[in-house]
Image 1 (tube, rainbow, N blue to C red):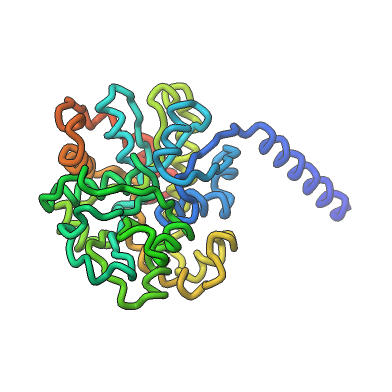
Image 2: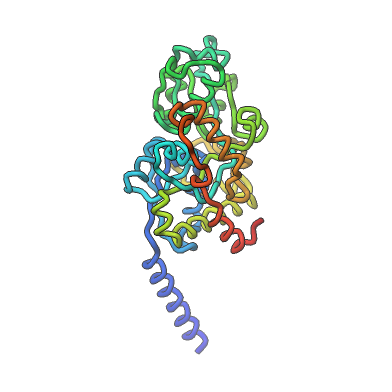
Length: 338
């Protein structure tokens, strides 16, 4: 009797699970370089099953850079993407994008010099007339570069910007000297440093100290965002995505780098697990512990874009419309996070 009852309960539970999965909302998240550790929480959430637990069926679509992922959201071929500064950038064009959960509290960017050109470049000012790699023109890495150039008195138009991606293509471009320098993210930055221990790094904002020195405060990077009209029509799904990301952040900060790496797809970890692990250890402090947007951080992003883009400097941007913490507050109560 007990055996039959247990079998019946198990069968019923399985049926309910299938029905639940079948009824889950299907969403597409555009990722501007899945191999980049700045996007790890979005990939890890899928590997941990957090999207399904929250009631959404998520497809992650990988793009070469953030600007292409942004285009997918604007063009409605994707529902959501993941880097906050695009919300500020589009606000200057009267297109409202809203970030609803932050997963990177620092930008995690590294401006390094190609080993083949190390003798020619010792500072940002030496980049005049040089070729500098970014993930893609118009991406966050591109705006970061323009900000650094302007801050150091270099005309951004005097530097050739080359799209080199964020993963193996970026490492290869730096190794071969196809570009003189590049803005990179982990794990590519750590992988290149592993190959060339004497790698010259001009700017490194993977941690708190350097981020504060460069930007004067925290600088939010990775954050799920969508069109404001999409969020208004899909509040349930937006809440589910927020729940999934916050649960993933909580998991990240309660597990070791080795345990996190073990959950990631082999194709993203790559053949050199030791170097990937080193990159991950460098990156973990970057991940948010709360998911909240700090208003001062949003202001720092606006300041960076205003310095590198006359269009944004002239625009009257209401930053409060570029993000919301409402969904995070609700998730925080569910998960018992502070």
